[in-house]
Amino acid sequence: MNTISILEYIYKMIKGNLDENHRTFMIYPTAISKTLGFKITKIDEGAATIEVEADPLKHGNQQGTVHGGFLCELADAAIGTAHSTLMEEGESFTSLELKINFSVLYGKKH
Image (cartoon, rainbow, N blue to C red; front, side, top):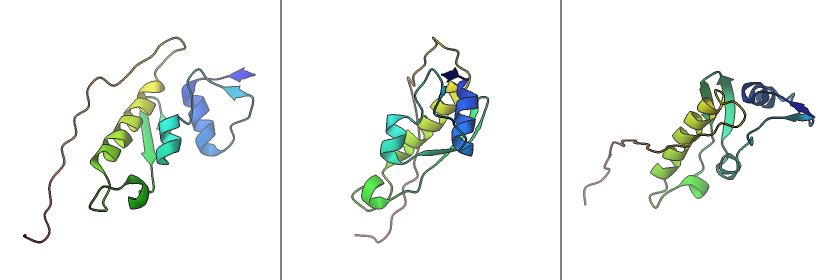
């Protein structure tokens, strides 16, 4: 078994050359990322880009648009992934506060 840094692990995962013997001390892809369909597309020390193909049937609200909580989770996943590249084995972290503001757009007047 070959234990590598989180940064190297995710980089290999993105490039598609992650060997079954490669391991790191955190779990990737995460359960929530698999559930929601997130994909890490770019990684660097302290930085991450995550993409998702939003599906109103899976990620939607009652209006058929993307649910605001989904957008919060996407932001939290990107922040957490970026932060994880700075962690050493035995260290941990969690989001304690996350604030996102949304603009409200109205269509027809009722």
